[in-house]
Amino acid sequence: MEKVLVNLDIGIPGALLRVVLGALFVPVVETLRPGAGLGTLSALLIVALFAVKVAAAAGRKAVPASTGVRAHWEWRRNLARYYDSYQWRKLVWFGIGIVIGAATASPGTRQQWILGLVCLAAGAIAEPLWRRHRLALAPQAP
Image 1 (cartoon, one colour):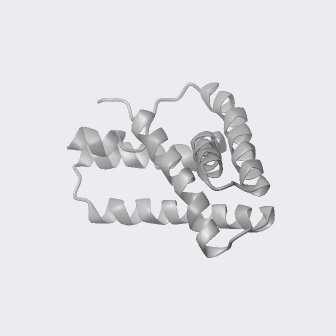
Image 2 (tube, one colour):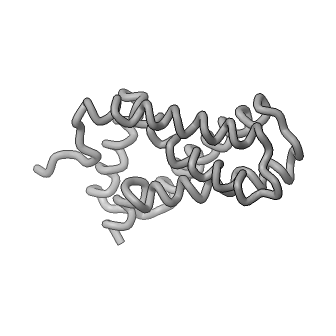
Image 3 (cartoon, one colour):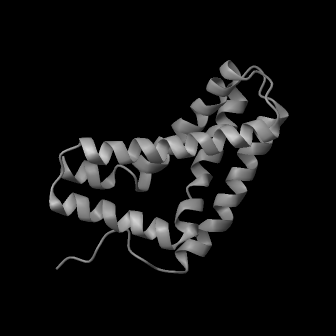
């Protein structure tokens, strides 16, 4: 169980989680604000990203985890605080999800496609910026 808690937010599970959230973003927004413009979509995406952050914080408080798991979580939160590119690179996956959501909508709006592609581009730019730091995603073992 500890391995699942440590790896939930990184690698393939983290990418799939973000793709699913991005894909769900489109129908949820279409339900709440049909035909929303790019500005509204962008604002709602920021709200959604903040909600993910709040849900993660609540999850960390609610889930009983060992000291080792909590150390991993703290390590990644510190990476996010000190390296913007660590967070921005996650937009690749949200962008892919939004594009999938727009592609499966009947039909997706131009604004949804633009938002998805902008997220994809921003994340694609941030990924090599993050990788140049060559930092681990976990604290060093004692």
